[in-house]
Image (cartoon, rainbow, N blue to C red; front, side):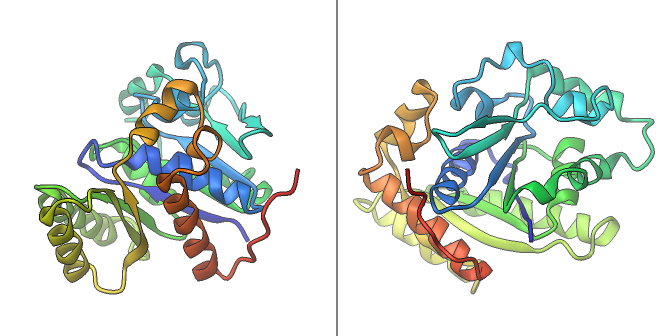
Length: 262
């Protein structure tokens, strides 16, 4: 069974794209067939995997506006990860979809055509409440993953996101659920980070995943090399944390963990 999760947070800079890439990479390392869908016009996930976003000719934009019926999915065997890339053209989809029937469900319908090829589909949503983000939420059949940075004002961003999810449930998708909250950018040297962890766990009892992602120079460097942390710095603390996150999600999903053997 394919599991489809959207990574979402209206606040930027929380490690959303970093988490989408590296969670996906470790799921791939553990034997899963993974597709990462870049739904952000900034195309950071695309660029972070070494793809020139300005040369993408068939990506999420073309799929959403209906120009292409067959996705040009890029598969990198070395990374154990497939990508449906984005490009700056995706910014125009908001306007072009205005008169499209059931425009909020475009991505959901598109994924139906090929989702059975994958064990996991991770959708990297834009850091805003937009038609693209709504499409990502509508496609999140198995729930949303919410990265939250362990820093000041994190809870304010969570409050806004919770309101958004409640509005979506009320108007479009009553079954939408939170799959898990992922704590990112944790700095154990500060009391603030620990305080934020405790507060987030109070707001989301039983929904905060145990694996905590540390603040890491290695994570910041990896995109410039077009690599996930699995390939760039596999022995780093950040890599070990994302590995733990992938294992945790797979165990909760009842999926067997079988590391990929070269």
